[in-house]
Picture 1 (cartoon, rainbow, N blue to C red):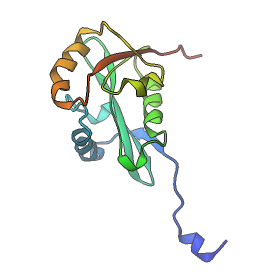
Picture 2 (picture 1 turned 135 degrees about the vertical axis):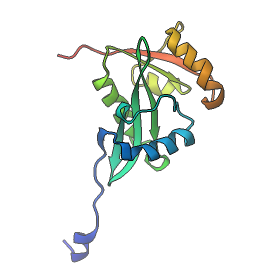
Picture 3 (picture 1 turned 90 degrees about the horizontal axis):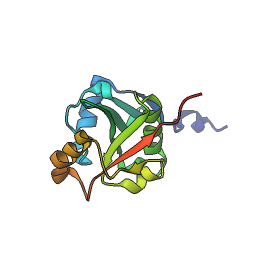
Length: 153
């Protein structure tokens, strides 16, 4: 090993953790930048993906009146296509409070790869959200999706 190698910082694996209040300026900035749902924000709803002490992604479980929604999944541009988003989504599914995991998205193909299916008759709360948020934030047609979480052994 060269002496110089001792001072080169090695890349660290992506670590997921609960968000803290100090993470919220980053999350809020990127929710706006990525045109993601920024309604009823609370740091306790979020997890963050951290690599080399920098946040590289985030996602949340948003409570509604009758259901919970997986959402606001964002990954910084230079960390995309490396599995960070998938890591976040899988962790949120693992900790989801119900076996019925819902989301609203304008990129259904991404979530279909993770097992979600478009639901033609979405719950009322998700339809209301689509009407309220998507005219300003969606890049295309938004759809509601569902995944029935497998029972844990």
